[in-house]
Image (cartoon, rainbow, N blue to C red; front, top):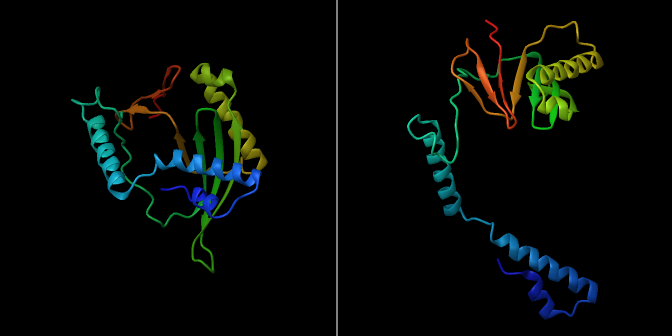
Length: 190
């Protein structure tokens, strides 16, 4: 995409500071133009990513695939009739978020979702320490959140998502969370 500011500069002599800004905008536009893709290029990227994801899922091509994939054993997804209060946990690399999700019906819209959440920074020792240290910290955060919202006495369905791959081959068996610093095995709960 050609830089519009260069055409403006030719038509009107801009004062010094405006000319400098226009020149910087032009430079940024030139750099960004290298990253803009047309529809065909985007479709090619999509096709290549899909191909590599399939290779990542296949046992015989997993090791050399550029996109590593692990199969999921989630058998169903929400179908829209769910109502009530739910807890959602999100464990990322440096933050842990606890969220209360209230799903119900609304007279005007027919359906509503309300959320309340709290973000907690994960201390370095919990991130790099033992599994017990990390899960103790998660339990402390959850306890704090439940106290803040006066819902510690309620038994709520819970969803837990995390930004780490997990090798989990059966819902009734142990899984292995693959962290950058170490591997962490889940405990059998069944």
